[in-house]
Amino acid sequence: MQKILIVEDEEKIARFVELELTHEGYEVAKATDGRRGLELAESGGFDLLLLDIMLPGINGIEILRRVRRDSDVPVIMLTARDAVMDKVSGLDMGADDYITKPFAIEELLARIRVTLRKHSSSHETPHDVLHCKGVTLDSERFKVAYNGVPVELTAKEFALLHTLMQNKNIVMSRNTLLENVWGYDYVGETNIVDVYVRYIRQKLDEKFGVKLITTVRGVGYVIKED
Ligand code: CA
Image (cartoon, rainbow, N blue to C red; front, side, top):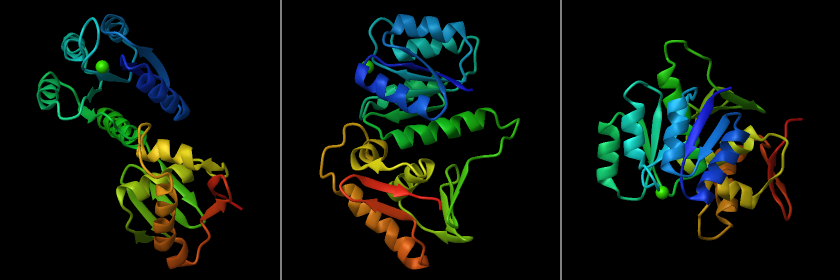
């Protein structure tokens, strides 16, 4: 099991990311201040670090600088919107990637996968391809196909389909889908989920005559494998 350390002082974000990563099968450790974060990071044993930059105690850049003295563990920085200088100094200090808050969890998960894969490319592992009713979804190459015929989806459509296929046979509420695909702090119409399901249906269900996404009235959506 791959171990991820998240150092983030905003409890809500830290908890949300911890839950999602755990759900994805990662082992997660969490620190909400810089000192504890550095302590854990230096204790080693992690496959990846998620470091917020503005932290009480020791900031994320400083943690990164100290970790980099003797470790090449992959690091993704969490930065506030438009904090260009933070990104630059983070990358200068040897961060592998950064993600701007607020972010959608699917994007964070994708970046974690890519960063981990890059890091371990020496021992090539088969990647994650989901299958259902003739539809295949390759989460790392961002490719969807129906019986080998490529289907062009936008990033959000892809993320929504990915979430539904990953949770095959589980009814997903609109709110869960909203949180997973649009982010925990999405503000706007909840019917955005319905709109995007419709887009996917146009490109898949209707085009190929496959019944992929089932509506569960009053609740949400499910992809059922018969
Ligand atoms: Ca912070």
